[in-house]
Image (cartoon, rainbow, N blue to C red; front, side):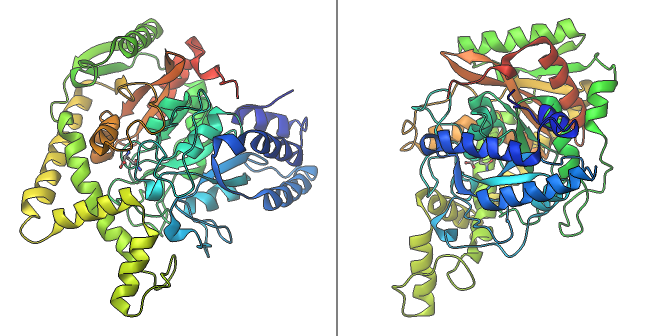
Length: 482
Ligand code: GLN
């Protein structure tokens, strides 16, 4: 018997059909068999995982269970993990061992999970293909010539390849949903503030949000409950009550959602993605949803606004990496100023430097009004479009990405083309909304995703609709032949 999903694993452990040590061992062997090729993990925490599994098994033998007892999980290497290297995909932090755990990690540990290791990612979460990582690109398990998407590519590829049953990710402009779409799995980005950002290395603080990768919506519902909630260590984390998402998905009989399809998300789609998308819409109609055409007229400006706001915030956030307190320190420097300069020149990669330059420029005196302030105004208009849309509809539907995965190397010399792969995802970050990508079909053998966007703190309906869709389809059960 192989156990692949969170639900299956938790049930098997509860019924004592398998021990925490056995399931951990099983996933570690799967990683060893496939990860030499896929490159999903930067650090494997094998010994710690096996020791922790033994402890959990001791508790289980006394019938002491926690909500996620014995569940193996992979953590994106952007989350600080006590005593374990936390690199953020960068040479800058290649030598950094975190002295504390991020709240997400802490909560998952508290709930009984077992960390398998830390996953590969674009450097400081800047990228859409995982090719900006200091540790080399991650491969898409459906076809190794293709990217898995980014920036949480290692986490997505690992779940798609079934070498981890679930994983964490972060989404600043699409980094959970886009790789989930390109790898054929579920990726949930919660509402801004739903999940604590404490201990999650900051890229763009007003956009960053932690979330999850799983194979289906119910698994995401189980995990979301455990990572959500107010955290006094993050002043932007919300006190809104955390519902029992799993119970809502399985017990509520709500089916009559009004679902809006923004014309801006479907007008320019290629034929194959369009066919899969409208096939999915038919399934939702069959379930009992009402479909409504809507317009989000400023979303077309999303990438432009995002590419000012995100670099501006990153230029400020990344100023802490100066070679003084932690991280890479250049050996070439002789003065304080050259220590800063050389450490940052050597420690950061090309894309990170590009963003710091763009962001510093956009924030500089004389340009602030023309760029940063303007981008914030556009951001406001985008949020307003969504607010008006949610007066008429419960959920918004679109494709997650304009196309299937692209080839490794294909867009590396064309940053604009790379940025445009986030065209359908960035607007929700600018508006702080929750959204999820679930598998909706294939184009030329590569998976493509359906994006469901909800109103603030309405993750439960996103999960419910995804669950209803997955009861009617089996795209989420398809596995790549690793
Ligand atoms: N791909 C986008 C970028 O490069 C989004 C990244 C993210 O969500 N972390 O900025």
